Each structure stands twice: as C-alpha cells, then as structure tokens.
Length: 132
Image: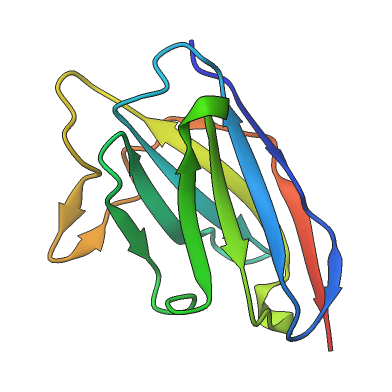
C-alpha cells in the first residue's frame, strides 16, 4: 500500500516562493503518476501539476504554467512542487496524490490534458497561504 506525506506548506507574501514536498512510501515509488491538487473550502478541487515518476514527463494547469515546477528526487522517494511568483489566489490546501497500474508508461493524458480521475491514493495535505 502506498502512503503519501506532504510537507512545506507555509504563509508567504505575494510574489514570493515556496516549495512543498510529497514523500512517497518506498513500496513501488517508480512508475507512478504523482499529482498535486489544491482545494479551497467551498470550491472544487483543482489539479495543479503532475509528473510521471521514472520517466520525467510533467504536466501543468494553465493557471500555474510558468510559475510552478514539479520535479522528482528519486533518492528520497520525493516529489517537489516549486511555486514561484505566488499570488493570493494560490492560497489553498495542497494535496499530493498517486496512482499506478501495470503497465504504466506515463500519466494518463487526453487531448493534451492530464486526467485527474485515476488518482486513488491521497495525502493529508499541507496549507499554503499567500497574502497580498
């Protein structure tokens, strides 16, 4: 069973940077799609970015493209989300999620957009607050 643990959430000023991380339990770290999602109370969850661990393919929501970078640190079974040029509208609880199947050669993509529905394992979340 895979376990995910987020960390790094904090309060920052608009324009600042923050890195949140997701540690994936060592069982089957590779060949997974790891996604970052965010949610504000009362609003729908939004997919932010995703990475195919082991292959390096990355995907981003239009709202964060050019500002956020998702990366993998394989030696630590960790996926990072580097967030730059933060805006107050980036304030949310950030969750990492994962899925895998055999075989999985990339995150599921349709029409150039990565799909959120396959994610079946979730972390507890880490809060990011951006003040103006």
